[in-house]
Image (cartoon, rainbow, N blue to C red; front, side):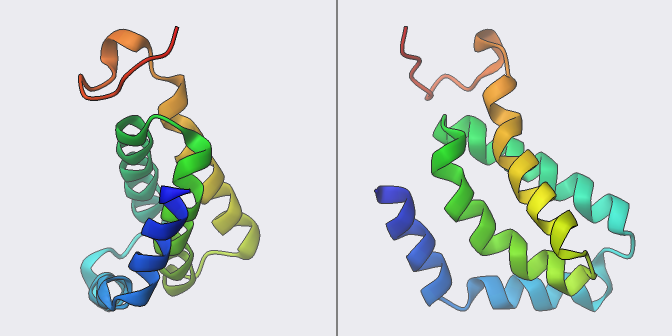
Length: 104
């Protein structure tokens, strides 16, 4: 439930709009590089939170406007959000950050 509140806070601020405008003004020219960086950041977010289902609203609220500004198709946008959320769940236990608690 907290992840939905956090996603609403992200949407209520102008931080995402500022981020999209700064990155779409020429900071990253390549779609491939932008997709790679979004997947890498999604990996770190998912590893930090520990659950792919909790990260989808957070990642989607940031990545959908970014993907639209970079010119990705809707299918590519959904794929980037889904893969970015799922990547962190496949990391072996010994590689996850120490603040993530594992349930056995």
